[in-house]
Length: 291
Image 1: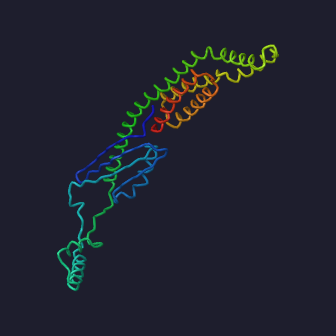
Image 2: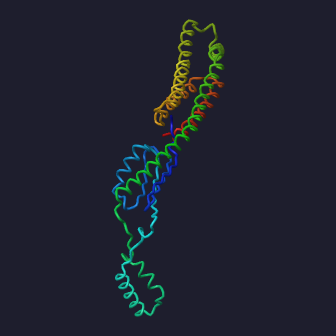
Image 3: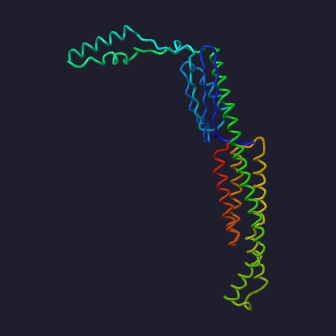
């Protein structure tokens, strides 16, 4: 089974005091690129979450956001340092009087001065940590389900394109029946026109002709291409299917298609090879998003 690297997962857990929501978004990437945004109260859990992401998510450009909602808003309330606020205000007022400027916004300025307002950043207890991990596991499970669904769509498309390359290989075998006779006829005609048949050592000519035609033989390329395509289709259905393995197989398919085109020396075959290359290029594009 193959999975897409694109996915989305949302998980939420709560108790009577707080609710944690974990949102995961994933796009394709060669490696795991993780952007993790956690409340400060859970900074000690960051390494644990990163290790779990590496194990469960594996690859992709992943953004994880953790949101906290308090049932009792007073639990998240900020604290105002009243004495510090008064000192700032008096100093600002004295400066404004000295300069003769407007005093209308002094309170707002004083309130925004450093350390006047402090937020309660408590260390989360074990119960809250369990809630966060539960929400994370739920989000990962939904992300994985999303990836499987997307992977099935990719599997069908990849299977269709690999099968089309096999079909086109069959077309090559249909049009190549007259390929060698045409090459022989073309060479014979050229020899007649340039040196004359009576001036040719026919035994030597036949030896050279056999050697030349053997170099143009595409039997091995056809066999290997068919084998690679069938292996690709088998790998798509395997339980351990992954984008890297499929990418390696597609590279081998490309080598055989390129060699087939360069050795064909036949307009009809080269046209079919172009269509094969189009299908292979679409396969490679799709594989960039396979986990």
